Length: 182
Image 1: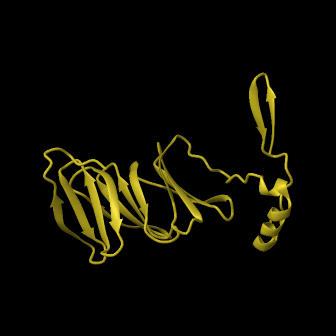
Image 2 (image 1 turned 60 degrees about the vertical axis):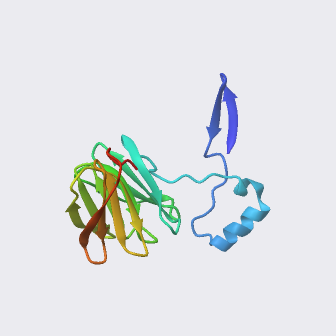
Image 3 (image 1 turned 180 degrees about the vertical axis):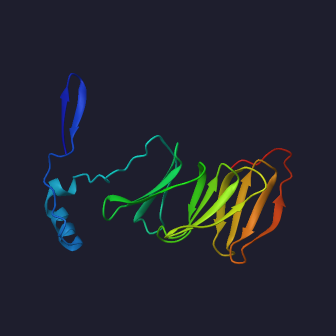
């Protein structure tokens, strides 16, 4: 990457370096990075890594291969593949996404908390199930060992769902007199 200054403005030339061929193996690329300083210092940009208006939440899959971002005004979620350096898919939603979680190692199991009191469960192919919670939600958490989903929001209760059985459980009450925030 080359830089120069013009009228007291620093300009970065991102396309000045040599590009590596797509067919090169990971082993050969790592070997070249050890010997060539220019290859080691180069920057790779993910294609279409943007959101049309605003992004609310960004998560990285546990395996590190996928970056998921949710956006507003035409609510949507986009998935970017870090191996291919491009957008994998985009899904438009019915309501704005408040928070979301990645349950699997990749993008194949997702949970979305919407601004219209719905929690949506998505599989690799798309929307799988949708359930409404009693109050507006602000945050959610997943406990892997028990398969419990916890949702907090505009009440002093923590709503629990057992995802293995597919049903709501007794909610946890807080001693606070105000609403719970994340």
